[in-house]
Length: 241
Length: 219
Image 1 (cartoon, chains in turn cyan, green):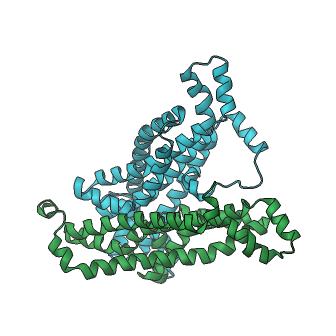
Image 2 (tube, rainbow over the protein chains, first blue to last red):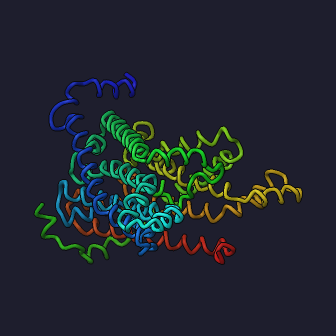
Image 3 (cartoon, chains in turn cyan, green):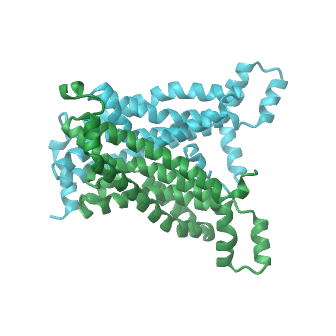
């Protein structure tokens, strides 16, 4: 039987769809861990980034924090935290949190700073109080960039949650890690398919959320004035995807 | 995990005794990273040029690299294990795939950032398409391309720690050994060295970036 047929057989085997090592359980673990880490990171990072952007303080710090974050290999961090926090969910959660915060801070800052100064000045000129300038002018205009940060962070979190299986936590990474140690390549491949599918689904979901949250007026003007050249950001702003 | 608790963080006598093993792992880590980024550049430079020259190629090139980038590293390695086994080749395929989006995108952005007047002037001076690319466009795109290399190197150093799982060695091997034997020292050494390597590489490339493009410093 060909390899891919055996992978298909793995997916069709009802034994792989039930119990504590079944796909639904592992998927649920993976998604819940990723959601919890991304949400907690957003709760910390977005207010900080938005505030820094609003006040214009700490710009260098806000932009460099994501460069520093990228330099720390998540597997190394995961293992070092394992030493401090012990086996289980805690090191995985803290690793994912540390991974998700930098791109969100940077994008929230860049998003708010990037709002057309003319709009902000006009709002202030009309007598809008400071907090309304933030809530009604800066935030809505910053949504596309801000949500791009959430999207980048979310996809990275889902990807990295796979590694948590290496420190004895669950999630879909279990199939890959267990399969590798048992030399069961069918299981390895099936796990890889599941993980890749979840990452793709996350990317699409967050992209849809990004579009849905972008104010309608901004969406239309974007399309009309989209520049032909230099549309993509240089990868110096890789996290501002 | 009682062993993890009593054991000290770093047993320096073990480090001294195993200095050769540690240095070998470090060298292997650097080698895996260098091959991946080198091969990534060899693919990304022509791919990026193609994407800027042929309008129809742009979407597929960047989109394809984007899809590869979305697949989690461990899964990408796992996809090739049935085909190429637990080997360095498997690791490099995954690592190269990861560098493609970062590098290709920066080549494209760098080339597109070349002002149209400069291109026109070069054409007016008699530069043919290929010569213009080599002598005018690529040098002007260099700062952005080197910025991409810097990100690719740092990202790859992080990913190489994972490739130990598929038997490719590197500093991740020390981490895995520590994990399986519940012995803290190699774990700490592997973790700290991989972070240090990433930071040193990032700083080194930042300096190289400034050296290579003295004209951009004034701006």
